[in-house]
Structures are given as structure tokens and as C-alpha cells.
Length: 109
Image (cartoon, rainbow, N blue to C red; front, top):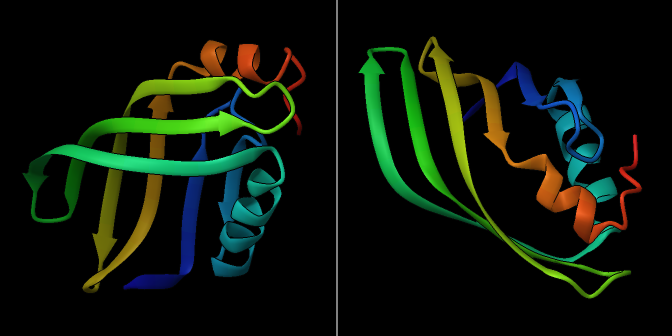
């Protein structure tokens, strides 16, 4: 489903923000992120087809910060592109101030 050269774009201000290039880097991102949260839930709400190779997904993130115990729910938008029948890029947008608060304003990089 994902191309070998997949680029997982994490917005600045989000834990471990920046482009994760390749499948191994993308998996490593989730391993690092998981250390800070009890769970992470992505709830897609609306799929928006832009054209044959681009899609946007509107949804929610739900999580709980391990250290502070703070619950977080925030809106998110994901942009996906595909090439040769596989997903090759991802970029998301959300309110990183909510995460910063839940992480006691200590965003890991």
C-alpha cells in the first residue's frame, strides 16, 4: 500500500516533526511517539477526492498524554498522494498547541 520511498510529513510543533523518509523512518516515528501517549486514535470523518492522485481526509485525533494524564481531542486534515498505485506522500495539519499543553510544553524532537 505504501511506496518504498514513502514520505511521511509531520508538521513542525508536533512531536518529532519533520519529514520521515522511507518506511523504516515512518515506523520509527510511531515508536517514538508511542512513548509519550497512552493511546493514539485517528478517526476519519470525511474523504475528499481532489483528483486521480490526491486525496484529503478530515478527521479527529484522540489521545491521552502519559506524563500529564491529559486527554486531547483535536481536528486534523491529512493530504495523501499516490504514484504507480501506491501511497507515496502524507502530510497532516492539526492544532499543535493542544499537544504542547498536554506534554507540559515539552515537545520532543
